[in-house]
Image (cartoon, rainbow, N blue to C red; front, side):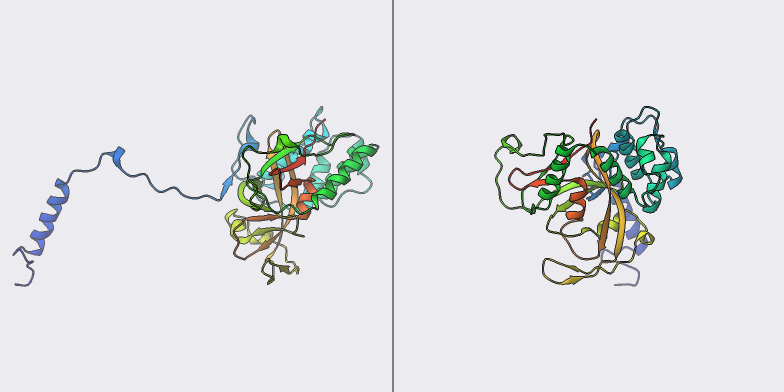
Length: 315
């Protein structure tokens, strides 16, 4: 075969021209017959549910100075303001947890609650909300007993049940406790000892595969999920708290971080600041909610009823 010719006796240039003519002459698929692109899995999705009902959209990126504008309105109840401020915290991507208490205290309307904390200002938002709890529960002995009962029940082992549904109960009134009954049972429910896996909102992201484990003494977020949130590692605080995994091996956390976490949906949504240990280890879950966060929410799980219940503040 002569150089520059193919098996059909054509030069390379003639072969390329013939190939281009064949390609141009081939019928193309109609647009509607093109196969759809494969779906992309998104384990972490931005949660916009708390923005519903707002008059105007906020900028995509706002700083902590925005929180100084979230002041308590003239006739706004303490419950409503705490809920609104907590939801505003979700809008701020990076905020120093130590600033939240002072910002919220400054934004409070003058009244008994603000005066009750004026002498010794809380150092953190958790401490401030704790003062709020003491203020709201003072003088109600039956409610105090119910609250303690809820905390005791939250310590019980509630690791295994199938597809739990997050439920909200009303505020614990004087003779009211969180209870489970036959009406809480799912139809055709089969107990197969699956783990308690729910979905929650963390730092404005809808996070799936969250394991509820009252046997864990720490709240854990795994580094893969943490990195997908786009939170800078500078937000991490170094810790020296080795953890023991299910297999018995020792795991050293990368650090710890305070993040807002919300259970439920508006208007029955409860938000708390939770201190997570960030762990870089393989896991089937994105987050493990342990006793600290469960007790903070006063959450109670029933492995038989496939439910997780917690009180929501009401007037």
